[in-house]
Image (cartoon, rainbow, N blue to C red):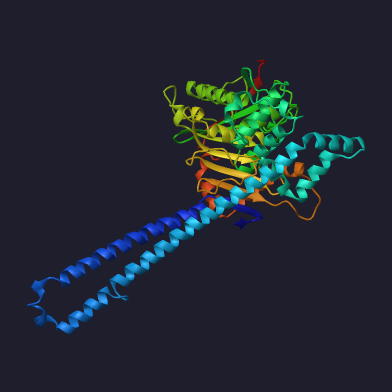
Length: 497
């Protein structure tokens, strides 16, 4: 549905919840039909009791008894009611099944189309590369043209969901086939190429790693950093949370930055973990893990140096909190009135404390990936995820985690998986159409500033799915009165292999 310029999918007002409600109602109707059938059977048994024959004349005439019995078992009676309920149950179940079957068939057709188109791209990659170089030599800004094109025709970006077709196409060309070295992804390939989108990305990344590109191997280093004056505060709204992603993701001031915010409540702290977006676009792997290497590896649902660094940062922040230290002198900052940072003490079980993972672009991919990681969720109780402009539709986030995804119709990045986010009660996607008649670009649509405006619209929205999400996440934005919020910043670095 649409609300305040937003198109909302999923959540308590989503289609899946509606289908589930229909199924539940259908189950209740089926139970009523059974009850009516049981009543009908008892009626017939009583009517067939020969002991009633002697008393029937004293009560009613035989004709009246027959009429009453016919009414009970006839179309207008119990039998008719049961039959009508069974018909309604059947029709409801058929409608739900048909809707889901159509939805699945549409998704399958779209995926096949994406693969077919990208197969052609892969099979003609050398010719396309020569053509691009020729256009650039003539002074044509190919990248700029594509950036403008995705604003005008956003669905172009959905074709990237055909990564399996791209790999199959590259394998079909004798010039590009030798460049593909599956490496660790070899077992993921079948006779027709990679079995899944994630397998295809792994094949491409492993092949590039042979040439020193997209290589995420090596240790991870994490160190405490002073929380800079820009954005180093506890957000009081979704808009503030998303807007803070701008300064946090500045590669000049905050390379590889992770922010952990401890928000005290009356029952103990809750934790906001903010992950930077992409800061480095060079495919050659460097020390800053907020780069395109992590983009590809995280979308392939692999463990990454950045994700490991996020876990170490949260572990350290929670250890400091349990010890009663805010890391004074090493970057801790507070907001709000003076008071204890958290309830509890050294004996506190941090694994039970709610965690919200947040990120724009790459940060959202890593956030959804960590929420999907059994190793991470075994140590940390992830209850909420917020993504802005992130391709996370294929992430297997558990149903118990409340996900809010902010997207823009003209932003190509969240479309890169070529699939919509799940429509379920715990996953809400709010999409804003930025086309107001102006000429724009996909890059503009991906900007943090635009996403902060979308977050503000979510804060104001009366859509039931968004209202329910805000109600469920209130503790992260409203600390206990008189308590101190603690902001801790960490720098994550990728070491040499």
